[in-house]
Length: 168
Image (cartoon, rainbow, N blue to C red; front, side, top):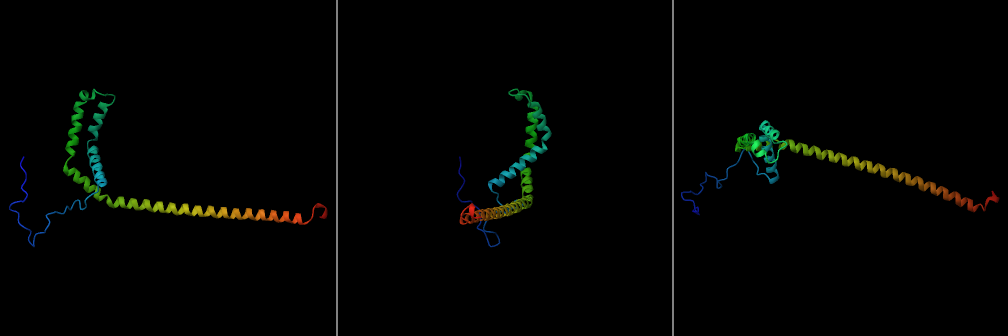
């Protein structure tokens, strides 16, 4: 096995008209995606391929229903048709199209997330207000009970000062 040379021959140093980096900007996909975002793009890519091959996939599923090992020889034609359809739509161009679709949906997803946060905040305020009302009701009820017990204690104290039932 031959190793690549450590220095590329014939390469010229960058001039003032050439950029110092050879990195090209990808205008279709302007940002590097996180692994979770890449997974979303892949999910969208596979979903698009499955949507296009839905009839062929359904034929294979109908053939395979109720079979176990015999699927291999009973449904061979449907299996090959399904695989060829999936391979037909599993291209780099389709992946790029799915990536572009994902990028177009960024604003919609942000808007949905912001709307969800607004709803959560509204619900939080509502719960806080309900809690305050409940606490106020409990405070008023506690004051009323305290006043009642104070009144009962005053009456009992009056009765004790009176000396008994024969002095009334």
